[in-house]
Length: 399
Ligand code: NIG
Ligand code: FE
Image (cartoon, rainbow, N blue to C red; front, side, top):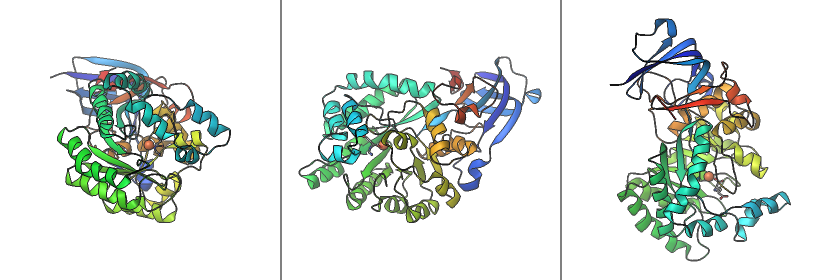
């Protein structure tokens, strides 16, 4: 048994365990002059330092704020090539969807990624995951989706599996864009070959689909989701990024873990999410980078939805390598309060991955936590462009 008491915590700030919706997202527990006892990687006790149980080993954090480790519930951190030319074209006025429809955008990342080996993909993704972790992400979801051909998709997931020895990752199979020809055959292959193989090899815990006018239809999404669920995989969805075509409603009906993007969601989609346990994951990096409308974070919380925030780290729509910055942007762009943003990036982001053992500094939870540079946790939603996170602890171990 290993036991360490973390002392010298000016303020310990945490949401309650489990996903939080509506007004409960603003209810944080704050303990002044706190201590945290970690036993074998889990939180064994939390409270005022004066009342801490005697422990042989103490780690004094020096009087700073401590918050739960952040969870990044949506990344495409594995890719090859770059999208710098797309970026230049977009800032000159060519829309993201036009670039994609002309065979650029995601399709150019697919060409570069499909040509890379597992080892090359690991080498490219490692520093991206390290940057996310330094910014406070103790658990990171990573999607495939730039493979298209099935072997390339599997190589992406194998790269995630290798990186899982160095980082705490949650792997997702993403069915991203349809081929320009033989689309029906592709969807059949996804259902009959790719998903069974991913399930048999335990290469992913969830299947995600990009449901959009330029990508997969609602009916194709339903087909893929049914097969995913039949293989014991969870489902997630990219929906309402440009058009609300019904994907959000389908995902809520089918019990998806999350629906992500939501920039084009209106009252019907907000109501569907609020009436379900499906997490509404918003991605402010996309709003900043593509200059598109922001997802209605404020309206979703006010309607009673479970809202999470992620980076959507990817080369095309969100080159955002900081989960702390995603948190900070959600306050500016989506109307979240600082307290809501912390809940969105911790317990709610964990719920978007089907994980209930992290995101809150409560007894029995994983000891994933952050020590900030200063005594006030609000540096986390406030700071732009510098890192307010001093130390990252995963399972009670400082990285
Ligand atoms: O989440 N919208 C679709 N997929 C990604 C973008 C991927 C890309 O542009 O390479 C997203 O924004
Ligand atoms: Fe995405």
